[in-house]
Image (tube, rainbow, N blue to C red):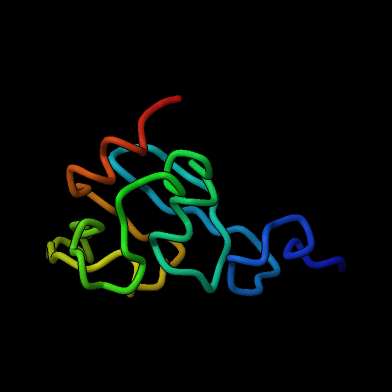
Length: 102
């Protein structure tokens, strides 16, 4: 089976398949083995690339709230790996501005 990684820029961690996550009530197919922020960039490439983000956790502009089996917690999207079935219930204002229905 050919890897999907060859179809994506080198900014993504290597992956062989897309996983489904939910983000703000939208189902997204994103590359496995990548941070939430990279997954959002996969879907909204131009917009996320242009966002005011530091990509290392210092700015806190990429905070998201996830729901894990009924328990909500805030995480930094650039430092948290996306998992199949993950539910992101809210985005920071910076991410929300760049993750709209284009």
